[in-house]
Length: 480
Ligand code: GDG
Image (tube, rainbow, N blue to C red; front, side, top):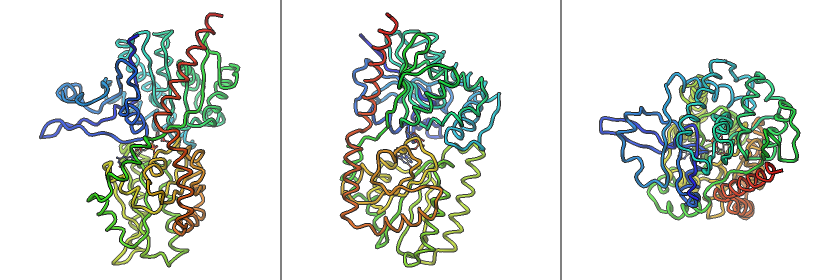
C-alpha cells in the first residue's frame, strides 16, 4: 500500500524572505519544529511512501513559486497554505494566541473573547481542510499538530470518514474549571474538532485526563479509561511525552569542543561560574521571576558579585502581539536596571542576547555553562531542559527546573522549584553553584538515562504504534 504521511502544523518550519540579493530561506525555531524535524531528519517516517508537511508560510504565493530551490536536500515535501493576512491575523494573533494560548497556560486574565477571532479561526481551519482534501487519499495518515488546528481533524473526518488521523497538542490542556470559561459553542466546536482524530496525544497524563473530563462534562459522553466512544468510533486520549534527538545533542558535545564559538564563550566565562537560559520571548516562560530570583541570590550572597554571570538568551517571538511587546519592554528595563545598579566597570551580572542562536552556539552554551536555569510559569513540556541534559556528555552541570513544566515529571533529579517563589529560585541557584561534581554526575546520569531511553524517535514511534492499535480497535468496534 502506497501511503503518504501528512504532517500539518500552523507554520511550515522555515521563513522565506525576499531581499535585494534574491530569496533567502531560514529555519524557524520552536519546540514543535525541533521535534518534528529531528524525527523526520533521522528517517523516522521512511516507511511512508512520501511525507508532506503542510502549513502557512509568511511569503506570498509569487515569492514561494520563485524560490524553486526550496525542496533541495529535503526528506519531505512542503505544502504551503496561503490565506489573506486579515484572516491570518485574527486566527493566529487573535484566537490562537490571545485566547487559547493564555487560557491553556493558566493566564485567564490575558484571554480575549472576540467572536470575529473565533470566526477567523474556523475559517483558517477550513482553508487547511479544503487544500488537504484535494491531496489526501483514503489510505493516507494525517498527523495534525497543536492548538492552532483544534477543529481540523473534525473537518477532515467529515470529508474522509475512515481515514487515520492523529492529533498532538504541544501545550497543556487545562482543567475543566478553566476550559469551561470559554463560551459554550466554542467549547463544543473545539472538542468535537479534536474528536475527529483517532488518537489524541498530550505531553502528560494530567493533560489527557483534563481533556477527557471536559469531553465527559460538555458532551455527557462516558469514558472507559483512556477511551471514548464518539460517532461510532473508538477514540483514545493518552500521554506521549515529547523528547529530543538525544544522540544528536550528545554527539554535538564533541563537535563543538575546541570550536571557535565554544572557545569564545569559555573566554567570556573566564574564572566565573556561568548560568544560562534560552527561551522564546513569552510571558509563560517566567523570565521576570527568573531575573528576580537571580537578583535576590546576588543580594543574599554578595560574595558572588563578580564571580557569576548569567547569559540570558531570548528569541524574538509573536512580536506583533501587544502582550509580547509589553513583556519585551519590561524585560529590557529590568535587565538594564539590574546591570547598571549591581554591575561595575569590570562586570555585568547579565549578558543579554535578544536574537536567534545557531545550533553550534546553542550547544556551546549548553556545554560551557555550570547551571541551566529554566523557570516557566507553565510549559507543556520544555525541550530546552532535555536538550541541556542530552548535550552534557561530560556528565557535569546542574539543571534548575520549574515544577510547572511537563518535563519536571521525567527530570526528577533536577533541582525543582516553584517559579513563583523567587526566594526558592535564589536558594536553589546557590545550591546549584555549590553542588559537588559527584552529585552533579549522579543526577545527570539518571536524567540522561531517561531522556536517551525515550527520545524523539521513541515518542513518534509510540504515537504511531498506538494510532495503528486504536485504528485496529476501531475496525472491531464498527463490525460489532
Ligand atoms: C512548545 C511548547 C513543548 C530556542 N531558541 C533557539 C532554539 N530554540 C529551540 C530550542 C528548543 C525549542 O526551540 C524550544 O522548545 P521548548 O519546548 O523549550 O518551547 P516552545 O517553543 O514554547 O515549544 C513546549 C514544545 O512545543 C514541543 O512540544 O515542549 O512546552 O510550549 O528545541 O532548542 N534553537 C536554536 N537557536 C535558538 O536561539 N538553534
